[in-house]
Image (cartoon, rainbow, N blue to C red; front, side):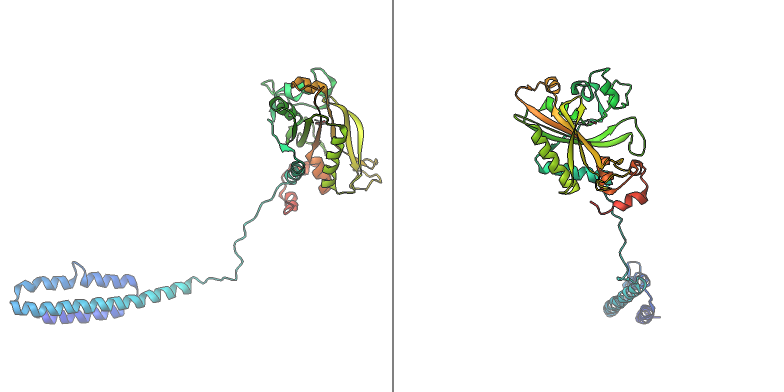
Length: 344
Ligand code: DAH
């Protein structure tokens, strides 16, 4: 067979194969087999050297033309196969855009935290700034400097967790008052939210719970200021019509001291189990900062006066959401927690 014939039959073979190619991969194989560096066309052309110059020219031209033709055919086939592949892909990957998208479950704040945030925001709106203190606290700040000396019966009011290193788990947020007054000169107006700990566990007491402390110190601060601030606060949480009363009480760090009650939100004041038949609910403790506390932090009680208050967040959350057992707030039962979704 001479070279011309060889090229001719190569052409027929390649065209047949291109026509039969089913996919891009197969087509590429054909390209490599015939037109590649070690392809059949190249090996035929290697024998050109043996021919006479005229023949070489003629065959060379035929071979080049053949190469162009085949490349063109492969290119065309490639376009067809690419389209086919895309079509197939679209068919296989049926995309149902009417399906609902994957649902990302959004979390939400725990009712205690959302109550704490709400309360903090109310005081912030009245100009109080927010301070935090450590939960592992020195006895000196938790007790002594708050006018609760050792062996004073007032220490028994709060069942304390004592730690081996001589520190305590703070029993209230009141030590943040001391820490703030040691660092800052009056005027001072802060609230201090956070966790506190007491050896106590029953339907209304948890060994860990949250409080928010308030402290305002300046010249000429009176009990009237305290009443005004607390009234605005309680009305913001429980509504404008909430009955409020101040009842004389005792705290070592305030003098005079008071406890504040609101009309029972469950029975409306008639008397029920929640308010133990009194029609009133104890909400917070407060008073005018005791001069002994001022002396402990080097603030002159003859120049400055101030008020302080402290309240339990869980108690407010329980009243707000009508929760009767505090333990529900801490057992992390997802069925319980889910009910507060969207509240904040
Ligand atoms: N620390 C008190 C407690 O945990 C609450 C309290 C009462 C805080 C009166 C105060 C206050 O700042 O003036 O029971």
